[in-house]
Length: 243
Ligand SMILES: [Zn+2]
Image (tube, rainbow, N blue to C red; front, side, top):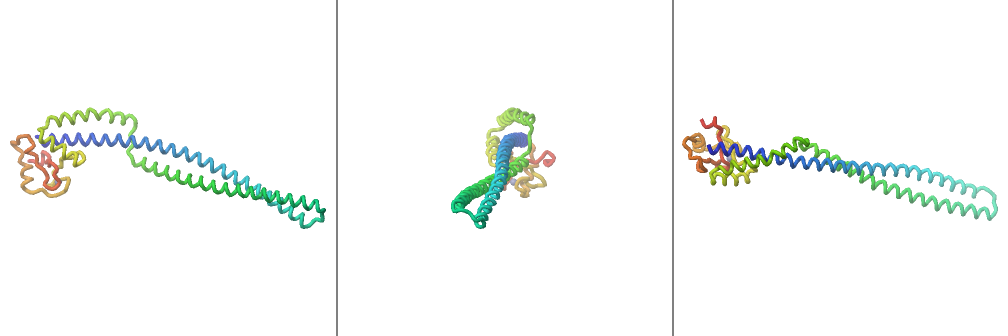
């Protein structure tokens, strides 16, 4: 019967779509893996930079302590000891030099702190990105290379089979099937279960149920197709439901 052919055709069509989607997801998943690797590499670089910043910070801190001690020492000397004018002048010059050097080192400390914060922000952003990508990857079904190749190989045959079957349909039925396929993502036929359209879940009128059951002596063309009055899908009652 025509409706059985349409039902089978729909199964093939949905199988084709499912496989196509699987391949798309598989492409996406290798893309994501690649992006995760890239982000991890970036992170490793950033963490290395942070290490350097921390080492620099320690070094700068030590230098500052040292300079502060020297300035303090010179200051103490200047206040206490009796010394010649010449010596006082020299000591004051030394202090001036030390203070200038200290300022420079303090500047370097500030820069180091600022740059380090930048790198810390970048690190956090990269960590978040890597986590997000990993979650995204986890949500995608994984397909190994072998099954991927098998799915890819099966598609043209499946496509051909679908086209062949469509070509054998009465023209009007084919047109209805195709336009409804477009409208309903490849599923133009709805099963009838417990007197209800399985797609829109609306109870079918007696007249429709009667037509579904009385399939004897059908001509095999589009006229015999029964559609749901609500959603418009072609209705399919399994063989058992027709008896
Ligand atoms: Zn319906």
